[in-house]
Length: 171
Image (cartoon, rainbow, N blue to C red; front, side, top):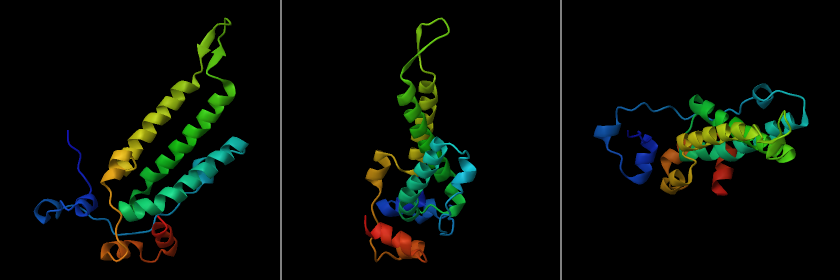
Protein backbone atom coordinates (compact mmCIF):
# COMPACT_ATOMS: atom_id res chain seq x y z
CA UNK A 1 0.00 0.00 0.00
CA UNK A 2 1.57 3.28 -1.06
CA UNK A 3 0.93 6.61 0.55
CA UNK A 4 0.42 9.81 -1.41
CA UNK A 5 3.04 12.45 -0.80
CA UNK A 6 1.92 16.07 -0.53
CA UNK A 7 2.45 18.20 -3.63
CA UNK A 8 4.65 20.58 -1.63
CA UNK A 9 6.95 17.62 -0.87
CA UNK A 10 7.21 16.83 -4.60
CA UNK A 11 7.96 20.47 -5.35
CA UNK A 12 10.69 20.63 -2.69
CA UNK A 13 12.34 17.42 -3.87
CA UNK A 14 12.09 18.29 -7.56
CA UNK A 15 9.76 15.40 -8.49
CA UNK A 16 6.68 17.52 -9.22
CA UNK A 17 5.06 16.70 -12.56
CA UNK A 18 2.06 18.74 -13.70
CA UNK A 19 0.55 15.73 -15.50
CA UNK A 20 0.48 13.75 -12.24
CA UNK A 21 -0.07 16.41 -9.61
CA UNK A 22 -2.09 19.19 -11.22
CA UNK A 23 -5.47 17.68 -10.32
CA UNK A 24 -4.79 17.75 -6.58
CA UNK A 25 -6.65 20.08 -4.26
CA UNK A 26 -4.53 22.93 -2.93
CA UNK A 27 -5.71 24.63 0.21
CA UNK A 28 -5.20 28.39 0.33
CA UNK A 29 -2.54 29.54 2.77
CA UNK A 30 -4.05 30.58 6.09
CA UNK A 31 -2.42 31.11 9.45
CA UNK A 32 -3.00 28.35 11.97
CA UNK A 33 -5.22 29.41 14.85
CA UNK A 34 -4.15 28.00 18.20
CA UNK A 35 -6.88 25.97 19.89
CA UNK A 36 -8.34 26.89 23.27
CA UNK A 37 -6.33 24.60 25.54
CA UNK A 38 -8.68 25.28 28.48
CA UNK A 39 -11.49 23.78 26.41
CA UNK A 40 -9.49 20.79 25.10
CA UNK A 41 -7.76 19.98 28.39
CA UNK A 42 -10.14 21.10 31.16
CA UNK A 43 -9.46 20.75 34.85
CA UNK A 44 -8.38 22.73 37.88
CA UNK A 45 -5.51 20.52 39.08
CA UNK A 46 -1.84 21.39 38.77
CA UNK A 47 -1.43 18.43 36.40
CA UNK A 48 -4.17 19.80 34.10
CA UNK A 49 -2.49 23.21 34.06
CA UNK A 50 0.85 21.55 33.27
CA UNK A 51 -0.73 19.56 30.41
CA UNK A 52 -2.22 22.79 28.97
CA UNK A 53 1.11 24.61 29.16
CA UNK A 54 2.92 21.61 27.61
CA UNK A 55 0.44 21.49 24.72
CA UNK A 56 0.65 25.26 24.18
CA UNK A 57 4.47 25.17 24.19
CA UNK A 58 4.51 22.29 21.70
CA UNK A 59 2.05 24.17 19.46
CA UNK A 60 4.24 27.29 19.61
CA UNK A 61 7.31 25.28 18.56
CA UNK A 62 5.62 23.17 15.89
CA UNK A 63 2.87 25.21 14.21
CA UNK A 64 5.05 27.89 12.56
CA UNK A 65 7.47 25.32 11.20
CA UNK A 66 4.70 23.12 9.77
CA UNK A 67 2.93 26.13 8.32
CA UNK A 68 6.04 27.03 6.33
CA UNK A 69 7.66 23.67 5.59
CA UNK A 70 4.58 21.52 4.98
CA UNK A 71 2.08 24.20 4.02
CA UNK A 72 -0.21 23.26 6.90
CA UNK A 73 -3.26 25.52 6.97
CA UNK A 74 -6.01 26.19 9.45
CA UNK A 75 -8.21 23.69 7.61
CA UNK A 76 -5.80 20.97 8.74
CA UNK A 77 -5.14 22.14 12.28
CA UNK A 78 -7.03 19.30 13.95
CA UNK A 79 -4.18 16.86 13.25
CA UNK A 80 -1.70 19.23 14.90
CA UNK A 81 -4.10 19.83 17.81
CA UNK A 82 -4.48 16.08 18.32
CA UNK A 83 -0.69 15.72 18.20
CA UNK A 84 -0.18 18.40 20.88
CA UNK A 85 -2.87 16.90 23.13
CA UNK A 86 -1.47 13.38 22.70
CA UNK A 87 2.08 14.48 23.54
CA UNK A 88 0.91 16.49 26.56
CA UNK A 89 -1.15 13.49 27.73
CA UNK A 90 1.81 11.16 27.20
CA UNK A 91 4.00 13.41 29.35
CA UNK A 92 1.27 13.59 32.00
CA UNK A 93 0.90 9.80 32.16
CA UNK A 94 4.68 9.40 32.25
CA UNK A 95 4.92 11.81 35.21
CA UNK A 96 2.16 9.91 37.05
CA UNK A 97 3.86 6.60 36.29
CA UNK A 98 7.08 7.99 37.71
CA UNK A 99 5.25 9.01 40.90
CA UNK A 100 3.37 5.73 41.40
CA UNK A 101 6.06 3.31 40.19
CA UNK A 102 6.22 0.54 37.62
CA UNK A 103 4.74 -2.07 39.96
CA UNK A 104 1.76 -1.83 42.28
CA UNK A 105 0.32 -4.16 44.90
CA UNK A 106 -2.66 -6.12 43.60
CA UNK A 107 -5.77 -7.09 45.57
CA UNK A 108 -4.05 -10.10 47.08
CA UNK A 109 -0.80 -8.27 47.77
CA UNK A 110 1.18 -9.55 44.79
CA UNK A 111 3.10 -7.11 42.59
CA UNK A 112 1.39 -6.28 39.29
CA UNK A 113 2.34 -4.07 36.37
CA UNK A 114 1.02 -0.53 36.73
CA UNK A 115 -1.99 -0.13 34.36
CA UNK A 116 -0.62 3.26 33.33
CA UNK A 117 1.87 1.38 31.13
CA UNK A 118 -1.04 0.41 28.88
CA UNK A 119 -2.28 4.00 28.73
CA UNK A 120 1.21 5.28 27.96
CA UNK A 121 1.59 2.74 25.14
CA UNK A 122 -1.70 3.97 23.67
CA UNK A 123 -0.34 7.54 23.62
CA UNK A 124 2.99 6.39 22.15
CA UNK A 125 1.11 4.77 19.24
CA UNK A 126 -1.06 7.86 18.72
CA UNK A 127 1.93 10.23 18.82
CA UNK A 128 3.89 8.02 16.41
CA UNK A 129 1.02 7.93 13.92
CA UNK A 130 0.45 11.69 14.08
CA UNK A 131 4.20 12.43 13.78
CA UNK A 132 4.27 10.47 10.53
CA UNK A 133 1.12 12.17 9.27
CA UNK A 134 2.50 15.63 10.03
CA UNK A 135 5.94 14.83 8.63
CA UNK A 136 7.64 15.17 12.03
CA UNK A 137 9.34 11.79 12.10
CA UNK A 138 13.13 11.76 11.61
CA UNK A 139 12.71 10.03 8.23
CA UNK A 140 10.27 12.70 7.04
CA UNK A 141 12.47 15.50 8.39
CA UNK A 142 15.40 14.19 6.35
CA UNK A 143 13.37 14.69 3.15
CA UNK A 144 12.31 18.27 3.95
CA UNK A 145 14.42 21.11 2.66
CA UNK A 146 14.07 24.53 4.19
CA UNK A 147 12.81 27.10 1.66
CA UNK A 148 15.01 30.06 0.90
CA UNK A 149 13.87 33.49 2.06
CA UNK A 150 13.63 34.72 -1.55
CA UNK A 151 11.33 31.84 -2.62
CA UNK A 152 8.01 33.37 -3.80
CA UNK A 153 5.86 30.48 -2.50
CA UNK A 154 7.56 30.75 0.88
CA UNK A 155 6.97 34.49 1.02
CA UNK A 156 3.31 34.11 -0.03
CA UNK A 157 2.62 31.43 2.59
CA UNK A 158 4.18 33.51 5.33
CA UNK A 159 2.65 36.83 4.29
CA UNK A 160 1.02 38.68 7.14
CA UNK A 161 2.73 36.69 9.85
CA UNK A 162 5.75 38.54 11.17
CA UNK A 163 6.09 36.11 14.09
CA UNK A 164 6.28 33.12 11.75
CA UNK A 165 8.88 34.81 9.58
CA UNK A 166 10.93 35.70 12.65
CA UNK A 167 10.78 32.13 13.99
CA UNK A 168 11.67 30.52 10.67
CA UNK A 169 14.51 32.92 9.97
CA UNK A 170 16.00 31.98 13.37
CA UNK A 171 16.10 28.27 12.39
